[in-house]
Length: 289
Image (tube, rainbow, N blue to C red; front, side):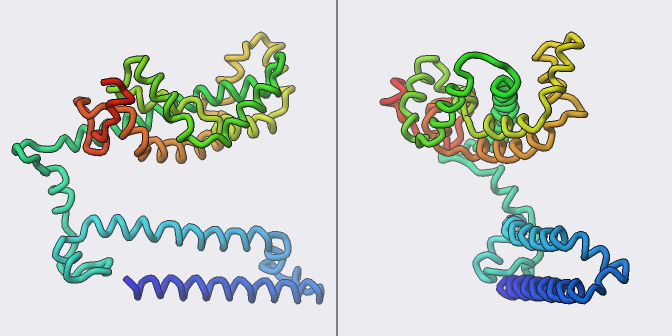
């Protein structure tokens, strides 16, 4: 594996040096007024900054993808290769599915099998439901703060922004008490509902809405459209102007919802029929169960 990483570092170094050389050559030819004599020269004259950004982002993507590739290949590596040939992306005994087979066939002390399939299904349900419900709530709130006029609109938005500086651990006890009082401490709703009040996504969507001309909404109102219909047209159809903004937030929200360890271990009871070992860290004194 060290050889592969060394090769990646060398390739990245050569690419950066080549990029620097290209920039120097383009700068010199611009000074001599000979850059635009060829088609390639005209391209670099007009898109040099974009070319540099593309190369740097491409290198960043390679660095970001390498750990993912290592993890995926490692999951198909046998236990023998891990023990006696560590650090090899391509083990000498080949790839195997034994690790996944062992994962789904783990047994408890009493001989029963762990419900790994249920755990994966629960993670999918929580991540998907929390993501789309949050986008629904945050998108509607962002629309109201941009396109609707009501008293204390800016003041309310400022207070909501201020809550972003409050650490999540500081609000854990009130949320825990609310979940216990609502009677959802042993359900998946305990993992879905608390995240719907986040301000970060609403702020991101609001900033995107600020770039949309308000005349567009006024035209829709003149044509008889309601604000709800106008918001649905902005956010909910195949020609949505906000699909890129929503898609970027979906990636982050899905990832955070899937691996929210503190919520899983705190807001679900150890006796929950769908709880995994991660879920079974119980705070019974706080949940009053």
